[in-house]
Image 1 (cartoon, rainbow, N blue to C red):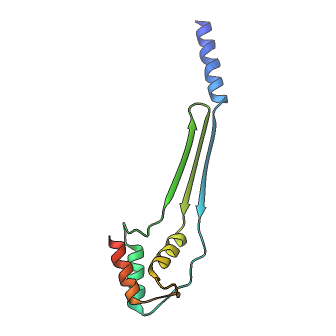
Image 2: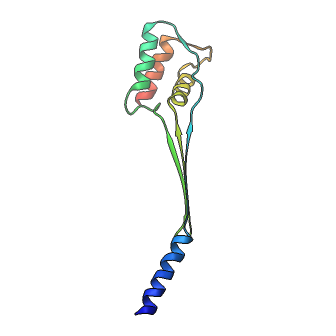
Image 3: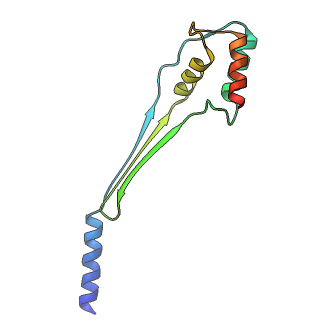
Length: 115
């Protein structure tokens, strides 16, 4: 009985001592791009599409996980901030890249996000 108890305690101590865990979260954000709109309708369409739940312009998160059971575990997570999603939406919407979103560009952006 003593040998079994001693063996269990030794095994538990070995497993607890040999376990290496590392978990990291990276937050990625950028400076918000400067953009202007042709008119109020263009701005309204752009922002309504950007804030629509389930749109393709939402923030993203990526996860990487590597583990060797009992010995090693590494988790890494990258979370995009709101400005990254905003900048990507501006680049998609402003098709000619002039920094000014027209009503036509905003309508195209709205239709493409609905798909």
